[in-house]
Length: 351
Image (cartoon, rainbow, N blue to C red):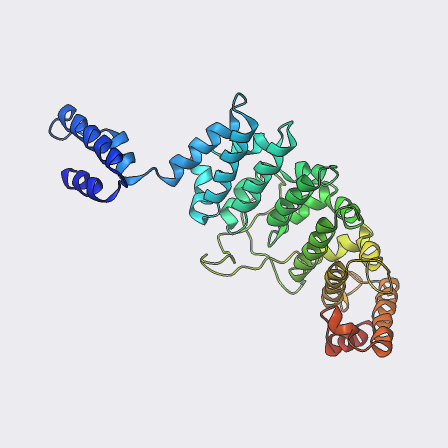
């Protein structure tokens, strides 16, 4: 410990005033500590700096303090968000009891607090399945679905960030999302022309979910979720740095939802020949239709996510229209990030 103090004095201060303060603190700590006793934690904090866990707890104390100014609370949440970008810190939220207070802030009556808290949770669950599951057990999906209907665009966007983080690679969450009316909310959000960013993110999310909707992939058995009563994942994972890949298949649930909740209609309304639609949004919508076709076209009538002849006909018309546009204006495919081979494969799949 004596060596640690000396090292700290030499390396952790930047000006004479800090050095003098630290020397005084160290001398007091030594004078008050007998053999075998520890030095004052304040001295160690001064030398080594506070741990991330301590900084997270302190930030949450400020954020949850109703007597603190709104500005200070938002700064605290911003600091908290930066800390939970680190996977280990996000995992540690459960150990140090920070999920309940952040969830309480998600329901705050001040929109700015809700937006900042949602930024924290969306960041925390982004790269780790354990953290994703911990948050999911609080049953936050109904809350975020309700926020998709908010007039506050920032709150809408952060709600979708969290919905995306909870649903990706998570068949249990998709099951829950279906049971609480989430798909209808997404269909409405996809048509919300007042929030283009939200529309783009919804289209992107739909394509992402469809990529894991292959019925040939089988989910691994796992324990039961208290939030849904259905099996949750085992300890196999797919996030960077985790142990081993797992099957995240939703086995047709997503395709089925797109058919049952008129999301296919919403997507088709955005693609050519639709006019005055953002090009990036159209590209994302077309990509979702291509993935839907790839996943659904050969399913049997008794399988979830079966593509009816009516849907096939409408998709066939969609891609035929694109072929006509390409013939009339060469470069249309490239404009939407498509290739000739992809369009030809759509023709083959849809007949």
